[in-house]
Length: 363
Image (tube, rainbow, N blue to C red; front, top):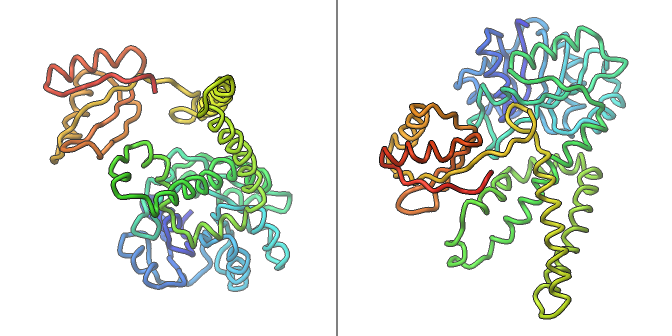
């Protein structure tokens, strides 16, 4: 892989370009908004100069509805020897590219399973795809050289290749990405006209639940519309559970035997959620692991977090995961997740060095 053209210099396209450039690949940048392409160039993601010869691979990083037309135009120009798109929906682009008469042998749909709530080239990171799944959707028409080219880009970006059909991919992302975004947005919408006094009670839980609602609506409406059926199926199941939860809470709010029945239903629904969460992959894609959790009060001054992690390192304890709650004043609270049996030892060591710690329930 010597030369690549990235078409669309938003978060994903620019992150791919940064990763490839770091490995010595000459990357050409193109975007319908030249300001975005120039911003990506200024970040060191490549050059806005048009390639003089066909590149090894063109990466089409545009919204799903624009993939087919962009691919057709690129193939007509003989821009590259192979092509891939990185849209978050795969069935609709596959059908549209075939209907337009695109060369399906030199095209392979793909989707890196990574992103951020921020958008645009300024949000891009060269390591955005490190260790993340990157789906490919080859079929019988895909030329082996095309598959090799896409696999090489995935490897250079540090991602893990996963082969799926377009339909299977779209069902999966509806469950793990698209429906969760809708749920986060709907919950965040409840805050739009909330009393300011109420919002002052906000804790980390609400921030976690609504974090991805910050995604750009104009981009997300295209993603959701392109995968509307599969996403609606997931949300329909959630809606049924919500109706059951609402009815159960109404029952639990009144005295008598109905309250006991309502509480049992609530417990069942919450337990189902707990069981579902435990099925999420753990560290590096391994089995779900239950860690011990502890809270540490951290001052709001430069270097405090680094000092805390250095203390944990000195104690010989690996931090498996962490979260920061900025709502506590005048300091923040850092939640450290460590392996079983390590929380008490770490708490003792941190306490000896002046940190205020509280051990929490298993996380």
